Image 1 (tube, rainbow, N blue to C red):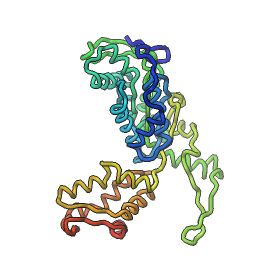
Image 2: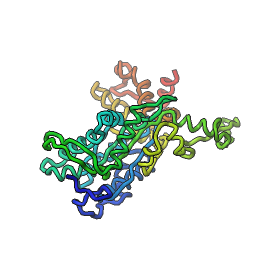
Image 3: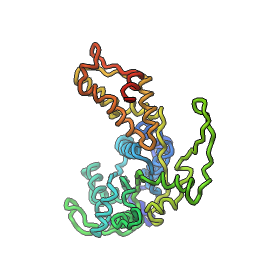
Image 4: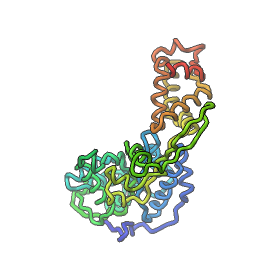
Amino acid sequence: MNNNSPDGISKDTPAARSALTPSQIADLLARKVVGQRAAVRDLAIALCKRLVRQPSGNLLLIGSSGSGKTTLMRAAEWFLREHTSAPVPLLRIHANVLGRAGEEGRPGEAVLHGLLEAAREQDQGADQDVLLDRACNGIVFVDEVDKIRSVIGTDVHLAGVRAQEALLTLAENESIPMVLPSWLGGEEIRVDSRGLLFVAAGAFEGLYDAVYDRVTIGADRGSLKPITKVVDGEVAEEHPFVLADWLRSEDLFEYGMSPQFLSRFESVTLMDELIEQELVSILLGNDDSPYHRACRYFEQMGYQLVVSPAALGELAHRAAARKRLGARALQEICRRLLKEMEFAPQDHATDGMILLDVDDVKRILDV
């Protein structure tokens, strides 16, 4: 039923030169993503290959909560919707869903049914063969892939084992059994799933600490050399540690990701920690940032929120100091800063304006 070639790429759609180069795709993605240059570049290359139906290695993104993994996935969705002419179905699925599908014996159906639905939404008039071809060459974003680790502590995590096996089956199998949805007739067929592109992402909580311990007090202690810095006139020693510099495949194996599972990912990309300037950009440039949400709230209450550049910088400085929280730190800091004003804006307004300067931010947050 599915006429894919031996490498999992459709024969039905002739290879064509992509209208956009990877660098152009990266520039478009960067409109929606702050920072994360390496992740943006890797995803842009994968998307470009997918658009011309060339084999593309799967991507694994590792980054703390708030680093931009979901934002990157949404940027890809936007790019495919707004800047491509050929429909490319895309599905976002939680890793645990794959595990449950694996337990039921048909790990491919949860993914392929979702991709078929996405393909139908893109082209209501396409026939069955076209929809199947597009679905089997679609893109799957797997959320919270770290939740399917095969071990938790010293215990085997059977659901995680099954989920990894399910993803492996989808990533490398040329003959996946599936029952078509009822709107496609409901018959049982076999399809080639090797044309799918998987972009998996997870926070991998605990991985940072495990690697840091390895290079400071564990098997590789002494590898991380201290540097001497003068801070406020005082000499201090620091151990600058960047996970990307020290992460090994063995660390991921110990975390609970099997060698077979990891071998299906051509690129393992670590998301960068967001710096102060990038956090300011998120506050000002993201329409859904806590700053813009607060502005809209006060407008509806009849007030204008005015925050000075110095105050925004202080917010970003405090968020950046909360390591491994990324943009999520902005949420908590803005909540603390604005909760009293949101409760009684009339008590904090002058001539219809609520003004926040850097001294106000320090006074409220330092309580």
